[in-house]
Length: 585
Picture: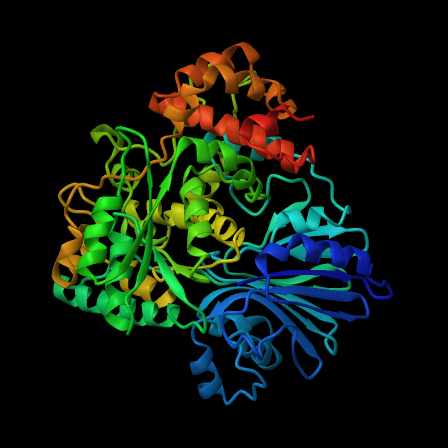
C-alpha cells in the first residue's frame, strides 16, 4: 500500500515541482517508509511507500526502458506473470510486472493483473501516461482537469493541496451523502474531481484523456446449474488460493475479526495456511445493551488457535478522536464502521503492517436483507434497493433532497442485464457503488491513516467466478443470505457458529449522541455547512431523539457532515475533541 500522485501536462509545459511536493506531503500517511519521484518533460510522478513486498529493493518509481511506474496496492499473480511471460524484472516488487506488460500489450495490460491496484505509468517514448484501477475498486484513484493538463492522486485531499482545484461542493453529491452515507458514480462530492471507476484504464496524452477501457469485476451471465457439493468444492479451492495469495507479505499481518461469517472464513483459512497463530483484532463498545461481537469472535479465535486482541471503544474515546476519524475520510463516507475500523487499525499498527478483512463477502454471496427484499415482487413485500433516505419525513432539512437517488437508479437500470436474476442485479448494484465508495473507502482511509495495508480475499477474480453465477437458492435459503458460505463453514469450521443469528456490532452512535444532545446539537447547528442545509430549530429535537434508529442515522449523518465540511471545505484544522473542534473558528 502506498500513495501515488502526478501531473500530466500538455506538450511544452513543465510541471511545478512545488505543486508535486504539496501532493506528496498530503499523502505522507499512506507511505511512511520512503518517497520517490520521476520528472520528465511535461510529466511528474510521486510515490510515498509503505514497504510490504521487497522492502529493501522495491522503491518506486520503477523503470523499464522509456517507461516509469508508480503503484498503490498488490499484484497477487506477480510470480505467475514473471514466469509465464519471461519478464526481465530488476526488482522483487510485485508492482513491476505491470510495467513490462504495458510495454508489450498497451491499453489492455491490466487484463492480466489479479489483485488490488491503482497504477500510473509514464511512457516517454509514446508520450503517454496510463492510469489503471482494479476491477472491484479496492484501491482509490482520482483525477482532475487543471490548467494545461491533468492532476491525479490516491486521495482528493492531495489534489486539493495543489491549490489548482478549489473545494467546491456538488449539491447533488451532498444530498446523496446525507441520504445514503456515500456518493455514487465517477463524480465526487468536489466539483472537478472525479474517480477513476473500478476496472477503468485511461490513457492521457498532451494533457487530455485519449483512450478509455473498462474491465468488469463480475462474470457475465445468470445462474448456472451446479450441485451444492460441487459449488462447495469450487468455492473452497478458489478461497484457499485467494487467502494464500493475500497472506504474501514480508512484514507481519493480522485479521480484522468480527462475529460474522466472512471474517470467520478468512480466519479459518489463514489458520490452515499459516505456520504461526493468526493475530486477530475485534472491536466492541463499553455501553450496556450495545451489540457486541467480541465474545463470539473470541470463541472462533480460540477454536482456530489464534491470538485474539479485544479493542474496547468508549464514548469518551469516540468524542476525543472523532474529528480526526472524520478528517481521514476526504472522499466522504459516513459509514459508522469508520469508528471501529479506525480504532482497530490504531491498535493493530502496534504489531502488524497488513490486515486482512472479510469485506466483499456480503456482496458476492447476498448477505444483506436488502438483497432478500429485492428478490420478492412488490406485491409480496419486495422493494427497490435504497428506496428511502436517512432524512425522509424527518422535516430537518430546509429543502427535501429530490435527486439523491438518481445515481443509484442509473446503476440499477444497468444491473438487470445479461440474464441476471433480481438477486444478482441487487448484488451488482452494491458491487458497483456502495462497495467501492463506502465500505472499501472506509477500509482504505481508516487503515492508511495509521500506515496499515488492508487486504480483502473475497474480492478476488477467482472467488468471484466461484460465487457469482451460483443459483439464487445457494445464496439465499430459508430467509438467510450467504447460504453456501454458511454450509462451507459448517463443514470446515463449525466452531464459528455459521447458522447462529448475527449479533452485529453497530456503533452505539445514536445513544451517545442523545446522551450529549444539549451540548452537541447547538454546536452542530452553528456550523456553516449545516446552517445552509438544515433548520436550526429541528437539530436539537433530532439529537435528543437519536436513540431511535431513524433519528440516530440522521443525527450521525449531520454530525459527520458538520465535522467533514469544517475540515475539507472550510479548511479548519478541527483540532481537539469533537466539542473543541466544533467550537473553534
